[in-house]
Amino acid sequence: MICYRKKNNEYHLKIYPPLEADADLKGEAAKFNFLSKMNQIFEDWIQKTPGQWMWYHRRWPKRSDRYF
Image (tube, rainbow, N blue to C red; front, side):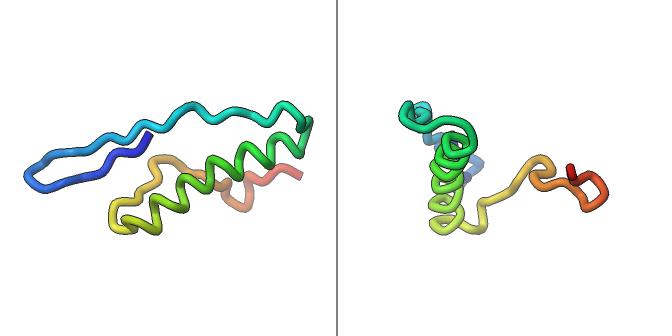
């Protein structure tokens, strides 16, 4: 779901259908495919309204938090 800010303190909420995993893919390929679909939604939204984009939590770990 995406929330767009409008004038006069109003908002527009766009609800997407649930993302479905590709049943033909397994393991890492399935994860990659699913995350690609999710990130495409983010990319489209950010390109359409870049001034409204804000990430509410730390998406990428700090260098010291990386998993090796």
